[in-house]
Image 1 (cartoon, rainbow, N blue to C red):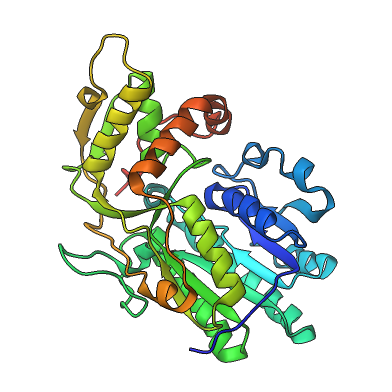
Image 2: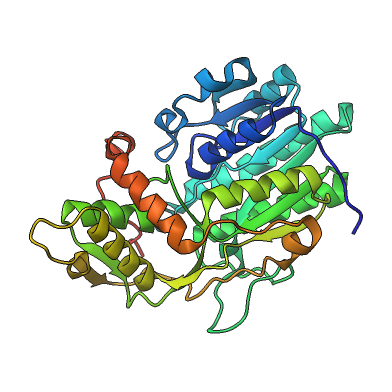
Length: 357
């Protein structure tokens, strides 16, 4: 495989106020000292300016935030023109499976039409300057469910189970088609479940941490037997940086953390970590707060990533162990409960989503 090199100078990050986005913005500004970055985010329920604290102060004129929606093509085109964008990292998406069950049309509109708008704006820019690069960030959920054995590779057929994963699958196909039809230099990545700081507290790990320390029940779907591969968000960000610089246009890269765990194993570990760091006043175990609840409709049994391509072609491997990364994550949430309260205020009360059928 012929190695290519791309040096981003003016980057557009979509969804940069969300979980992965705000971590990526910090990472890429720290590792690319000459980069100018525009962060475009609609600030929906999971995107918050509180997640971007101190970035403007730390990076000055190199960083610009634009409050806008990727569904507005004219605004997207204007951002490309005004900031002379040569690199796109597309992270903006409606991304929670349970919310997609309750309201699928928002996922279709943002994840599909919004992606098409960005691809068109990038294509227009590329026609005027040939150094444009577009990276589309996706999920392993597009592949559907594995049995007890096997791994998702880049050639695994798509078989999405939820409105969320179906919308991301459609966006993936659009990104590939803009490369194959128009020649736009596009790379794609499909990652496993991310965890780490600044994740909106509707997701499993932050929700369990906050419920555990608050003495609330810890709801586990079904029997907790569903398996996910866990990837620390900082490892994900470093992989994206490598793909941007040296990935081959038209190529897809799976990004995994080599950390398969059942949901129940994850919750047990979280309970034990919270007990170690902040013991219950009665001396009891947070495991006693676990409650098994009705499973999610269409809940895929197992995801697992084969990340050999990015390792063999680009030399990337995760640096975080799951044990060390999870402890650091628990410590972060316990130390940043004010952030949690701020982003959840009027947005999410901790109740279960995705019960609509």
